[in-house]
Every structure is written in C-alpha cells, then in structure tokens.
Amino acid sequence: MLNLQEAERASLIRMLNLSVGTGDASGGRGADPLSEASTQWKVLVYDKSGKEVIAPLLKIGALRHHGVTLYLQLEDNRQAVSNVPVVYFMDPTKENIDRLVADCCDKKLYDQVYVNFTSRVSDDLLKYMAGSMLEKSKGNPRNISRVAKVVDRYCAFVALSPSTFSLNMPRVYSQLHSRKVTDAAIEGCVDRIVNGLLSMLVTIRQIPIIRAPPESQSGPSTMVAERLHSRLMDMLRSGNAQTQDLFSNATGVERTVLILLDRDMDLATMLHHTWTYQALAHDLFDLNLNTVKIPTDDADAGSQSSGSHGASGGAGHKTYDLDS
Image (cartoon, rainbow, N blue to C red; front, top):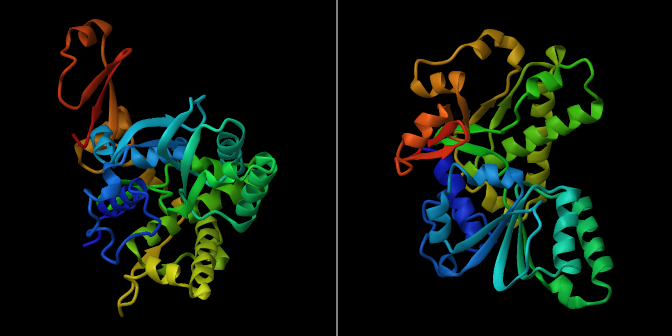
C-alpha cells in the first residue's frame, strides 16, 4: 500500500545522506537510515517551501540523527561554516539561485555545497545559474567547485498523512477566480500545482491515467491536467535511465487514476468537515503542517508545565504537534 509520508521521508533522508538518485524501486522502503553519510556532520539551508516540506516529516531529533547539526533559513544572514558539507533545499527560482551564487562566490560561506531543488529546475534557470557562477567567480575555479552536486528532488508537496498531501497554497481558489487576477498570476498558480502533482507522482513512482472535465467546461483543473500530461510525456520521451528509475513502479498492467476537479463542482464541501477531532481543530484553531495553536490566557499559560508532551508555549497560545 502506498504511503506518501514514508516515500517522501525516504527521499528527504537520501538528500541528507548526500545521495543523488531518487532511491530504489520500493519507494524508499530499502533506504538505510544508518548509512555512512547519515553520520557525517552537515548544515541544512532551506527556504520557506523547503522548511514546510520537512516540518511534518523530520523533527529536530531525526535531523540530528542524520547528521544535521545546524539548520538555517536561506533568507537570513548566515555566518561561514568550513569543512562540512552544506545541503541546500529550495524552490528553483531566480531569487534563490542568486542567493546561492552569492553564498558561493561573493561571501564564500561554505566549502562543499549540495543543491537540491524541490521540483525540476528548468534548462533556462540552469543556464542562468551556470552563467552567474562564471561571472561572479571572476576566473577563480575554486568558487565554482564549491557546488558538488545539483539534484531535482521532486518534493514540492507536503505529506500530512500516509494518504493525504497538500500543495500548501492558501487562498489559491480566490486567487484563480478573482476578477483582478492577471494571466501571469494564473500561469504561476497552475505551474506550481503541476510541479506539486508531478513531484507526488515521482515520489510514489506512478504514471497515472489523468481524468478532468472536458474542454467545454474548461477551468483550472483542465489546464492543470493538460500541462501535467505534457510534462509527463516530455519526461517519458527523453527515455533516459533517470526517467526509467523515477517511474520504476509504473510498469504493471494496472495504472493509478488521477481525477482533477474544480472546486466549483461542489462548493458546499468547502464549508463542511468530517466527524473527526482533527477537522474540528482545523475549523476552530490555527492548524497548519500538523501543528495546532490553541489560545490560552497568559496567566494559565505561565502556570502550566513547560515540559508537557508535544506542547510548546508562546505569547497567548500553546502549540501542539499532532504527530507526537
């Protein structure tokens, strides 16, 4: 049975183990958490998207178990760390590449850098990255050699449970249906959705049969379906060994069916929740990335034990981890 959390966690562990490949055909079940690279000290640098992907899957103890002694935000001002590998986990954007180039060529923060993009980086961005590295290095090959590997990690989704994932795109429905939305904004939303769905399919190693409303009822779901199909076909036409490895589980007779529908088809569902405590907590409290914030009085919060299991204090609220 497919387990999204375990499959994506295995992919992240391979990243922390400084592995290039996407793993074995079992979807990561054969990954060795005690491999040699997992005991090597390293620094993890991530952007906002990378942090959201990691948060529900690898807690602080798990990161330390796999050799991460320091984890930093890409956007923050960071100090130099020498003689340890540094793992970057970030979206493939021009802004993030500019920060990476500055770290390697201008600031010279790290000696050995492993770049992991959450989704596939385009050829144009790769050329931009190479050109920027050459320009900023000013003839010094040492700056360029700091980048040890560049990997498309295909983890542009958040696995919240074994069978549930999120693209973590709040208010995307209102954005796509706003009267003031621009074509560029729509293209950006559709691309991000396609990248997330493609990452999920690569993670579970499936090539699905895609079903969406007909063109006569064209909406965001139809656009996503067409673009996702095009991306999958482009990958399969390449016919290289990497693509065959990515979809190694898609060789059977039966294929997964991916059904894409517009929220307009059932607006009432947006106002309902299932009869579970998790859904109730989502309606009443701030529930995000499997953590819930419950408001408390300052006096009560101060009198409660700071060592309660799965909880952390804050100004006027306590935070609980649903996976604890």
